[in-house]
Image (cartoon, rainbow, N blue to C red; front, side, top):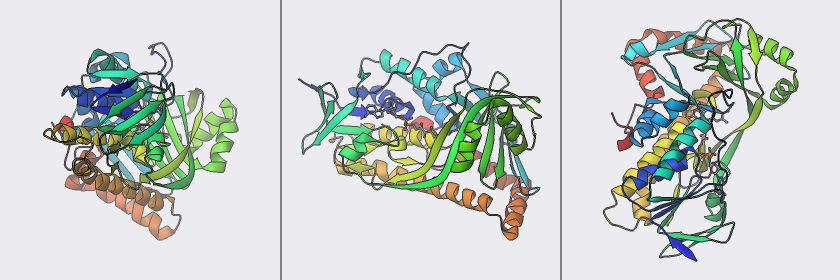
Amino acid sequence: MIQRFDVVIVGGGMVGSALALALARADLRVALLEAAEPPAFDSAQPHDIRVSAITRASQRVFERLDAWRGMRTRRISPYQAMEVWDAAGSGVIRFHAEEIGEPDLGHIIENRVIQLALLDGVRRLPAITLFCPAALAGLDVDDRAARVRLDDGRVLEAPLAVGADGARSRLRELAGIAVEIHSYHQQAVTCTVATELPHLATAWQRFLPAGPLAFLPLSDGQCSIVWSTGEAHAEEIMALDDAAFREVLGEAFAHRLGTIIDSGSRGAFPLRGSQAGVYVRPRVALVGDAAHTIHPLAGQGVNLGLMDAATLADVLLGAGGRDLGDLRVLRRYERARRGEDIIMMRAMEGFRALFGNPLPPVQWLRNTGLDVVDRIGPLKRGLIRRAMGLAGELPSLARA
Ligand SMILES: Cc1cc2nc3c(=O)[nH]c(=O)nc-3n(C[C@H](O)[C@H](O)[C@H](O)COP(=O)(O)OP(=O)(O)OC[C@H]3O[C@@H](n4cnc5c(N)ncnc54)[C@H](O)[C@@H]3O)c2cc1C
């Protein structure tokens, strides 16, 4: 039996479920496929090791989709300041929300909390049919429709199929869209830690020669760390016992928050940059990690994905009765997003190259650069606004 919809979205992660909500608010009939139900949340549980720094622009999207409340009632951690410094010198830059008259710079939120709050909304809206657990097994596209086959044999048909199924997108593969993948030869080691000194609601980042080490402040006083480093070093770190791990972590962080007094379980994630050759094909569009992945050093990956979702929603809702799978409609989305995503990716590559370079002139340049940016008000405020996702053309869900 074939079930018909206006849009079929493959992947009910943070980006796919946000897109489903954005489209259903305008009464489009949406099918959302998700392979795995996230485990239920209980505030007595320790923080998950997968967290995201959520920008103001993304917060606005969640507010408009009525999902922000569901995150706040579970667990979110606002941060008011950011401090970035270079291990090889004295350069330092500090941002504070007060400098631009904002209450905070953003929030650290567990990925599972984001996904659960969005899925609450998905279940509330009758315009969305959630297929979960259900995985994509096949795709067939012709002039009239895209047909998505589930692993249990059911078939969903719509003018448009969207791939929101992450970095290893099966939909992208079935649609024959090539992807350029670039390994950073690094892994990110993540973990929740307790520190001797309070984190002061500050997101800390120290640039080490092998990669950045971030301490992200959590509402219970602990920090979520993201330590990006060479593959062999990451494996060494993962193999350490807890006491030895806390020791090397404290040293790598120059004991900025005193000694590390406790640490939870650790995870390691290989880091890759990727860009799909195109974001759209007739009757197919890609959003989020299915379209691009970037280095987590500036915490922008899912924020970019949410802007993809909000932009695609603007384009589809503004299509004025035209076929939603028409390439001319979809290209508006690609034009609006691909350039933005590539700029962010190149900026991250530039940062990484600059901070990974041991040559003394480069060290001098970056230390001086950090200090200069720290002192020039307008430049600094511009950077803060960019980091909060407020620079450039914003989709309607992300506007003030
Ligand atoms: C260490 C680390 C730290 C990070 N920190 C940040 C940060 O601070 N801020 C930030 O913005 N970004 C951060 N990111 C990036 C961020 O995690 C990703 O950009 C984000 O998870 C992408 O969301 P997504 O919904 O596009 O994809 P995913 O989160 O990968 O979700 C894809 C969904 O699709 C489902 N799925 C997959 N295949 C199928 C299928 N065949 N059928 C049905 N369903 C399927 C999956 O179950 C999943 O739910 C970080 C990444 C890493 C590795």
